Image 1 (tube, rainbow, N blue to C red):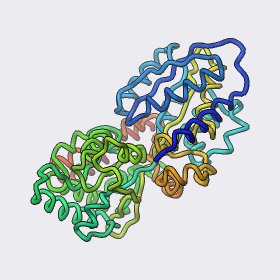
Image 2 (spheres, helix red, strand yellow):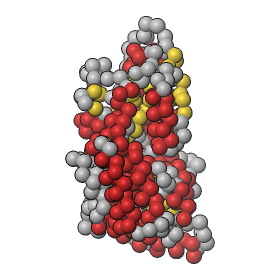
Image 3 (cartoon, rainbow, N blue to C red):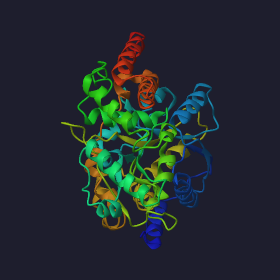
Amino acid sequence: MIRRTSLMAAMAAAASFIGMQAAGAAELSIVLGSIGKDVQEMRSQLDAFQQSSGHTVRIVEMPASTTDQFGQYRLWLSAGNQDVDVYRTDVIWAPQLAANFMDLTQAMADVIGQHSPAIVQSQTVDGKLVAMPLYADAPALYYRTDLLEKYGRPIPKTWSEMAETARIVQDGERAAGNAQMNGFVFQGASYEGLTCDALEWVSSHGGGEIVSPDGEITINNERAAAALDQAHGWVGTISPPGVLGYMEEEARGVWQTGNAVFMRNWPYAYPLGNGDDSAVKGKFDAVPLPAGEGGASAACLGGWNLAVSEFSQNKEAAVELVRFLSSAESQKARALGTARLPSIPALYEDPDIIAQQPLVAKWKTVFENATPRPSAPTKGKYNEVSQQFWTAANKTLAGQGAAAANLQDLERQLRRLKRNAW
């Protein structure tokens, strides 16, 4: 259980990071979406920043859907909106929004070396550091330890093993009286989250990364089709039909009420699942995602960053805020409180994190080897590429055509996008 004293100590250290009160207090705003306790966690860190700096910061809260967030960000930035100073940005957005954000290279020169080079590179566009890492992310397969023990099943290593165990346990529990039990819940709605899930299935089967790092369209292949067809077979059998509308919180809702054997989700769900209000408290654990047949486990690289708007009227104070929130002290407090993965590798050896957040402590290798989405090669067209991919995946899950036909159509659509210069 997280010790309150440890959290308070970490937050006090974060507060001291600023050192001296800035000359002239500013009124800042930061925009972010929320799953789990993101807003509460951010508010606690902003309170510490306000106390140490003299600035005030309000939160502009966005919908949970990253797709909706991106659309709103793009509208505001294209209009030169001066009301938002700091944007919390997805790891994939840097190439698309770079022109609207400050270059943080000089401001962060003395601390950027603490962070994972791969994440820093993902936020660097044409030599410009677009955003500072807030936290990294890589998903896990959550599983019910009590139910696997009850039915004598091992932790699955492949998707086929997962599906078999999910069916056995689901059917057994339903026969015993829990008609609401499901074998597996994930993110199946038509949004960016499904791009992550489907990319993991495809990549773990050896089906590539949608678009290769050098810009070649690779998604239309037999292994990718086999992966999506396999996932279609889960819907209505081990996964509820409603999974086609699930985002992260819908999946967590089913899981945390005790009505799923397995769940694919991000590390934030780990401490929430062990909360006092959770039906699965003390009854679950998490491991790397399964592999496809003949393939290897693949986790989609996630994570969020902080960018300063070029249109901010308080750039100096906004940079100060970004520096505070991305610091080692703030990242430690965030890891302890909400199991968000640090982008600073040294924190994975921190004794408090090891003791209090075991999933975070053992997830360093997973995020360092995570599969990136093709935002770098597709640049400003990434959002359209991703939308076409998640649409094809959702259609396949819903039984609207076989994966091979849907991927063939997808390839044609992506080739049209590429001709228009991504």
